[in-house]
Image (cartoon, rainbow over all chains, first blue to last red; front, side):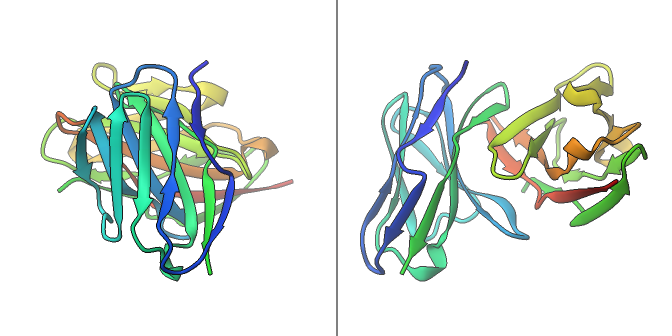
Length: 110
Length: 113
C-alpha cells in the first residue's frame, strides 16, 4: 500500500515561530502537494513539486515556503506563523493524478 | 487558470434515494478529473477518475460519474445511497505538465434514515 506519512497529527505553535511540517511518501512518486483544509473552503493548494528541488506555487502560497531535497520528502515551512494559519494541513503524492493523502496535521497557532 | 466549482455545499438525502453531486470545471484543454471522499475523521480516498475514453466511469462503493465536455461537468451519481455514504465529497482536476491537482470546495452529504 502507498503510504504518505505526515510527521505530526497535532501541533501547537506560537505566533512568530518558524514551523516545519514534514511529509514522506514511500512510492517513488514524482508529484507531491501541500494543501490546507478549512471548513467551507475545501482543499486549497499551497505548493506542489513535480521533481526534486522543483516547486511551483499553488493558489495560496503567501506565508509559506517548501523544500524538496529528496524525492520522498516534501516539507512545508511557515516562516513566521500567524493565527490565520491555524488549519488542517494535508500532504499528498500522486501518480497520473491519483493522489494519496496523509492523515493531516492539525496546526494551531496561538 | 483552471478551477473547479462544486455548487452545492450541503446535500441531504434519504437512505435508498438516488444521489447526484455536481461538479463543473474550467480548463482550456481536456482535463483529468477525479472524485474523492472524506469520511469523518478519515483521510481522502479516491472514488473514481476520468482520463479519456468512455465518458461514464465507474468507481468504488457503487459510484459513477459522467464527463460532459459540452457542459464542463463531471457529476457524481449513485442510484441508492447508504447511511455509510455520509461524508464530504471533493471533485478534483489535474492539469498541466507539472500535474497541478486542484479541488473544489466540497459537498457535505448527509443521509437520513
